[in-house]
Length: 159
Image 1 (cartoon, helix red, strand yellow):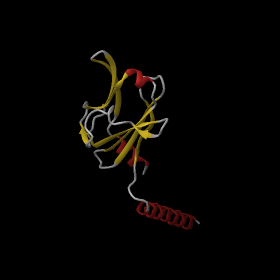
Image 2 (tube, one colour):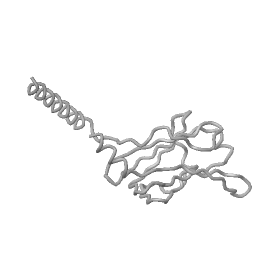
Image 3 (cartoon, rainbow, N blue to C red):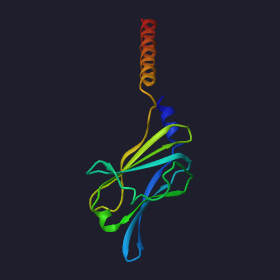
Image 4 (cartoon, one colour):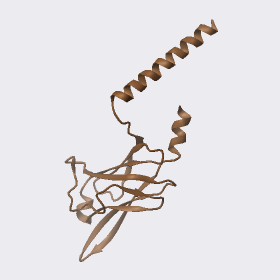
């Protein structure tokens, strides 16, 4: 089971937030884009931006790029954020990236930018989001039952 989990992570997309500055008119703005630096596609990529102090989504005025889910090929990037640099320096942002990998698993990765920082830091590495509650619980119970049954058979045969 552990080998299967390691095998699946080999086919996962890898994301990197890239922060740049651009001059728009008279004022300096900060842009953030997310690049797939991995070797595999990421399907239905959706990015949520949350202000960490208010726990509310960032206003639509500063969001950039497409709102619809998109596919990111290796070395491709998508625009995420465009805001004045002064405002960018004084806000804490949590960036949640939700996507499907090549193995058709729903995955999530989280980055954060803290006050006065310019770059995003990885907060939570890519994790699988399990669909449903009851089905997963039944699968876990079935796995535990089989494991206990297997260990009891082994102890009976060794006696």
